[in-house]
Amino acid sequence: MILGPSNVGGKIETSFLIITAACVVLLIAVTATMLAFIWRYRRARSPVAEDVEEKLGLEIVLTVLPTVLVLGMFYFGWVDFDYIRNPPKDAMPIDVIARQWSWSFKYQNGRQTDTLRVPVGEPVKLIMTSEDVTHSFFIPAYRIKEDCVPGLKTHLWFNADQTGTFDIFCTEYCGLGHSHMRAKLIAMPAADFQKWYGTKEEAEGGSKGLELLQAKGCLGCHTTDGARKVGPTFRGLYGGKVTVTTNAKERTITADEAYLERSVRDPGADVVKGFPNIMPKLPVSDEELREIVGYLETLGQDDDHARRNGHAAHD
Ligand SMILES: [Cu+2]
Image (cartoon, rainbow, N blue to C red; front, side, top):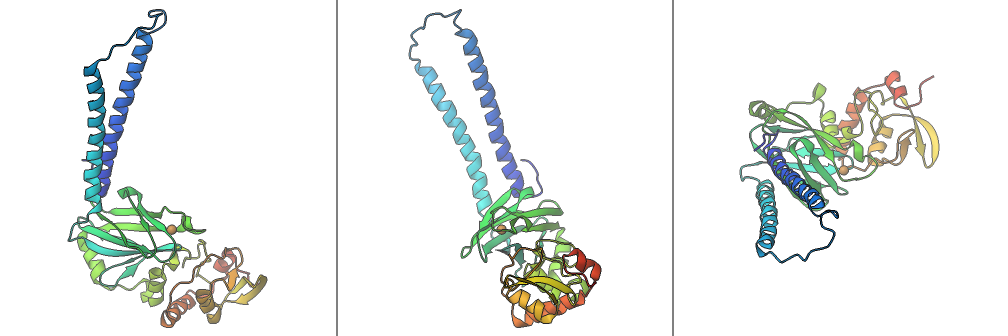
């Protein structure tokens, strides 16, 4: 049994290696036999074809051996598949919500984040669905992958064996922002996890607005630090000038409260120059929208960032 960063990863790795080893042995055996036959039955030595007599013993061996081999592969595959498909009863459930183009993770106590945090050494069950199109949840390091389908609940489970940060990808092409649909899995020592899980720690600056941006998955496409992603950064957005396309006409407007609210409620109304019109409409209540816009205002105006972001400069 190979040890990986998760229990499941090690099992898949073991099955994979057993099957690969069987294939290598077969390849060598078949190739060696073929070469021996080429030599043994070369024309110079056997110019005339001989009648080949039926050899029952050989036929039985050639039937039984591959059957045993294939059933052996099936056995290893099935046992691990069964293990991987059936989470233990005490596994901690976490809801995974996929949407264009971000992931949300919702814990039993109502906590919602854009980073999947799990305790090492405890089984975790992911209950997954999608809000729009079909996505696929993939943790390469753990060798697990499952589709997220709208209207359907699918699941995965694992037990993190080691602490660490691992990539999460969407592996089902789901639209223009697909390649940005990434998240992180953080496997933490159980005590640290309990501390994080138990305290309703406030996000940077104690902002409810930032928490909402994380929970709604906005930060999958936008940043708060000035970096450009699929969408414009929020840093320096408020109060600055933005060049947008409205009804196929380009215009420069001030990013005020009304603009920010409209951009959330009706993302296609004013599309920022240099960015594709791909933002989905997210379910946001009026109160949540106020919190979000209030937080965006604190990120304030900053010409430098604004210019880098493709916004019109002030001069
Ligand atoms: Cu996706």
